[in-house]
Each structure stands twice: as structure tokens, then as C-alpha cells.
Image (cartoon, rainbow, N blue to C red; front, side, top):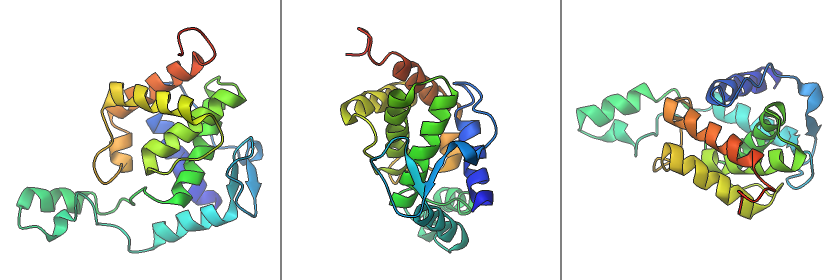
Length: 190
């Protein structure tokens, strides 16, 4: 499980590079729990969610990208689907729970206080997976999601893949989210 979390953290580190360096993975800072706790602060990562990530990584649930382009006669769509076949789709509750915690920890390392990092984590989890967590104020999370969309555009139909999230436009979007989260509680953030 530690190896899978290290892989996911490395992906986050690349995706948030424009906002700042989040450093190496340190699980001692995290709250790891046996049962799911999707509302407590700091956000907790359950063993069940980690097992769900591992299950998807090891399963054959890959290659169904770009609207099942591998089944099309269009050579371009087929080529794109084959190139992305090694990536896991991120639209599930386990990834959402894990990414909310990881984004919270990344936000803390980028200088956000606990409340701002919780909102940031929820917004990032929603953008990546389509599943919203409930650690912070959802209205504030919506504003952060809007900032991402202004900078990087809307998520692609069918959800993000990590290759999308590490693109220059998404890195710019994550940076805009961090900058807006820093402004929460000020007159600018209304």
C-alpha cells in the first residue's frame, strides 16, 4: 500500500509543480484509519480506499478511454486509446477519498491552513474524479473548481487521466486554485 501511495504522491508532485514543491511523501503526517471517515479533519484515508486503488491498478479496467476508441474504425481514435490504455480512469469513490487526502496534504505543504487545505482537497478530488468529499465548505470548493476551469478549461468528457493532469494547462489550473485558496477569508474571495 505504501508503494501505491508513493506512486500517487509522485503524480501529485508533478501535477502541482507550478504551485510549488510539495516534497517527499511522509505518511506520518497523514491520518490513516481502518473505517471510512469522509468528514473529519484532517481528512482521513481509509484502508478500504487504498485497497480500492490497488485493485484498480492490478485489474484489467484499463483501455476504456476516449469513449472506447479502441473499438472504433477511426485510426486516430484507436491510436489515442492504445496510447492511454495503461492509465486507470479516475472516476471512483476510492480515488476521490485518496485524492482529497493527498490534495489536503499538498495544500498544507503549499502553505494553506487546515480549513483552506480541506476545501482545496475537496475541490481537487472533485475535479479529478467527479466525486465530491465533504471536509470543507462546498461553496468555496466550487469557487476553486471555477478557478481551475478558467485557467485550464473544463475536464474532458469521461474524466481526467494522469497524462492530462500533468499537462501545462492543468498545472496552471492547480496553481490558480492554490492562489485562490490563499485568498479565502479576504474581501477578494466573495
